[in-house]
Image (tube, rainbow, N blue to C red; front, side):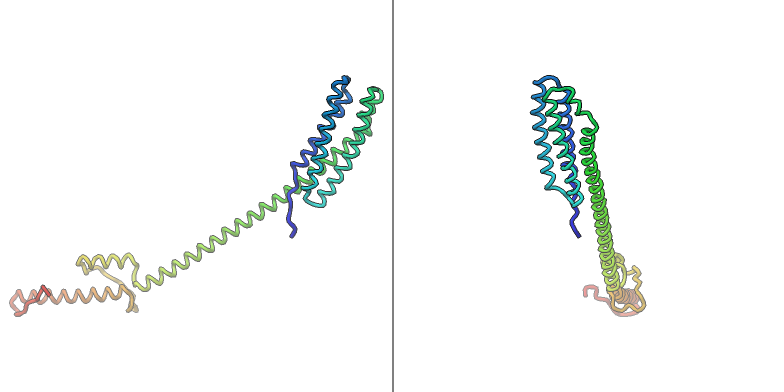
Length: 246
């Protein structure tokens, strides 16, 4: 797929601006009566014409498509006709013949100027439309990339959640009960309280909770036996003592 190049709108605007400046100076020369002022304007015209030529040359290096090139050629052709007109008008203006200078206002000359304006305007409209279309494509690509990124992040989050659930379920299965309940039971046993209920599944014979429950039941049995023997001894029913230092 060919790479899209955004047309150089600013460079073409510079060409248009410099043409308008040159055109204004030529007609200012026609309407000026003072030789001194005319001489000053001629210097300005030469400078403006050079800048216009430079801006046209600079635009050649930034053309973005074949259509852009074709429109550029139309611009140059129209400006070439305008140069011929400008030279003729300046010659008549320098002759200082008012009757001859009146030719500057005839329909043919106005048509030449309008041709340049139309060519540049058509070129500008193309550049704006083309740039707008490329900008829309860029925004569409950016939006698609953003959507893809969001989907990727959602998938990654779902994978993390799934792995976390798997680990939690595996750990819970190994522990037999929820970790916080198991911790509570262990703390109760450490404090000498063996009355905390531990519920495990009937088929559970291997979990940590099952082992602690069996240990609790065994300890409760031992403590009950010790209490029973102690009570019987104190009642004088048995001549037995329990070595509490063992």
